[in-house]
Each structure stands twice: as structure tokens, then as C-alpha cells.
Amino acid sequence: MKLSAALTLLFTTLLLNAPVNAGWFDDLTKKEETQTQTTQTENNDLVGSVMSQLGLNQGQAEGGLGSLLTLAKSTLGSDSFGPIASAIPGIDTLLGAAPALDTDSGMSGLLSKTGDLGSSLQGGAQVYDSFEKLGISKELAKPMVDIVKGYLDANAGEGTTDLLMQGLGAIL
Image (cartoon, rainbow, N blue to C red; front, top):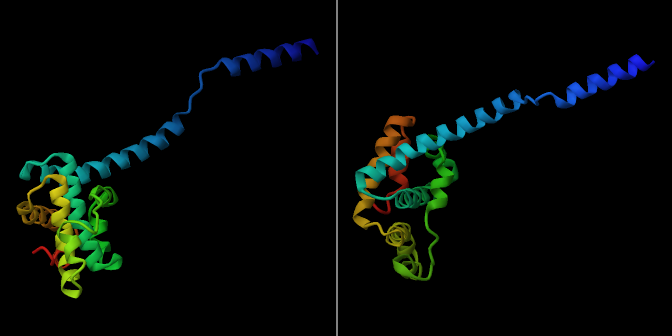
């Protein structure tokens, strides 16, 4: 009986003092981190292109892209915007980077008070108001659209670029 108690005590001590190895758990989290990093890298490709080609900082590039994509999404509706959203990894981050606008001020605020004609122009005005808030010249909207078009041409299905252009009609 004493031998059994001694072996149980020895076995318990060895188990409690053994190093814990949760390698399987580490592998699970590494896969998730790798997937997140891949998404960020692909998203950063688009953001990086805007930064390098237009001389903007990361906040300006993300906010400017978010403003353009927000206009496209609101113009097209969520269903038609789906192929664009699928083609741009981390699109929610970009959409969230678009600055919040006060609908009573700026060009978009004035247009919101002019009725139907104003509402058709308001989307473009919101992009320009966002650019102004981010410290981006409104003249950079067209080159930024061209960068997104090039990205979609390289990374999206056929017709996705056409959807983008349809969604951004208010500023083109």
C-alpha cells in the first residue's frame, strides 16, 4: 500500500513539474495570425500604392480609399457592391477609415438642402469633404480611383471595375 501511495505521489509530482507544451494551440493561433497578416499585406498593397503614387500618409490613403468605397457602396447598394468588397481584403477597415462628416456643413451639407438635384451630387461632395478633412487635394480623387481600378483589374473578377466606375459616377 505504501508503495502505491509513493508511486502516485512521484507520478503526480512529475506531471505537475513537467513543462507545459501547448504547441497545438500555438499552431492554431499562428494560422489565424498568418491569415490576418496576409489580409493586411494585400490591403496594404492597395494602401501602399496610393501612398507611394500620390505622396499621402497611411491615414490619408486609408481614409481617401474609404471615402471612395463608401460612395460606391451607397450608390450601388450592398448586393451590387459585393464583388468589390470581395476583391479588396480588409475593406471594412478602409470603410471605417473614412472620416465622419457633419451633414449640415461643407459642400455636401449645402447640397442636402437643395432637393433631388442636390442628392444626386451629394455623394461626390461627401468624397470631396472627406478629402478636405483628411488634408487631401480633391484633384487626387481621379488618380486614386485609377489606382483602385488597376488593383481591381489585377485582383478581381471581370466586371468588377465597371461596378466601381458605376458606383463612383458622381465624381467622375
